[in-house]
Length: 187
Image (tube, rainbow, N blue to C red; front, side, top):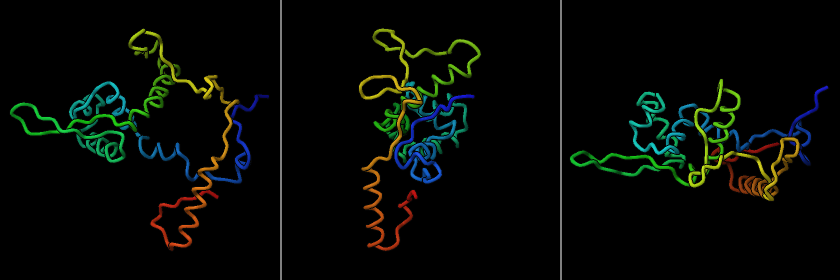
């Protein structure tokens, strides 16, 4: 018999049939960056691409697709538009990572690391290293104390600050009348 390999769901989360992940942060992130072109545009921004034509050609997408993804990532706050002007030409915009976009780096590198391990027929095409020393860089799940955590050692519990905030939103919605649909709740 195969052992169950899953995170440890704690407290009210232990009964998976008793709750739904309606406000799941993973789902919200995937709604924003869950397309191939969005992730590859972020990859290119990490590599130093800044101009529209560079994103479209390096990702291998149409200008229309590049424009749509750059607009979406900019409106969401992962990229910022910055004006530039080459001599004798009109002002254009380049795209630079914001703090929010830079904070997504571990997730994108984790995808790369996973793809290197499971999808490449041989060695990884690129190596991640600390620039100053050449030491290998890996994305890992670690506790605040620095200990690497395996899936079976990962506890998932309800964030009481989230629960309190949700109750306050519900109370406010009940006293203020109908909402604009921003108040998604879990049961």
